[in-house]
Length: 300
Image (cartoon, rainbow, N blue to C red):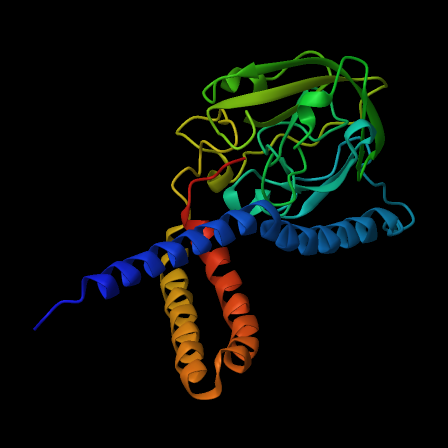
């Protein structure tokens, strides 16, 4: 059998071009496509949270008393616990409970081993910097004195930025309890990298709300063997193994759709076949990217 060198080179060239296009599409998905899923989650979370805080307080039976001194009980992981607003950088997001990979894909996440914003002590929130809506993309622009506004079930609270600094991913002391009433925001640094953490510390400008009863956080949100939390991005660095099978299946389906489109192009002509097949291929590819991204290390 005689090998045609030109055909082999052409096939290799087409394969390289196709691979390069797929990589570029995946990068585009990471930077912008993930924001679509985050936006859907934010709409739901904001609606659910507003329903909770706007609901009338439970009525009391005559002769009984209600406990109002203590704060609300801890929320389940993934539920909205606050709305954070940072006017200087245009942030207004619902904050979810937890800093797992799944939680941070929905929006900024509250470290469950710290108090809620507005309560005494050091409340801490993590957020993505480059993907899934990138709520903390411009966090480095905050300066001393800039306001951060947080609404929880206990009311509205105002913080003023006290300090910004960069630490190693292992610098868990930024989450330590504090006698001051603080809000600590963390995200990856520099952008598009997880080699460091950018930390913004703000101080509460008013009297704090009541603290809730002492509870133990869920194990899935408390990395390590001790009670001390780790910075977001460190605990779930290995990705989600459960996404392996869906990623493979959707990847095979994407390849099948493209193969069928190519075969039809030989019968119907390229313009007709690709006009019909490309939209279907892109939808399947988007779902494949969603599952494939779940396999990758977290990049907060």
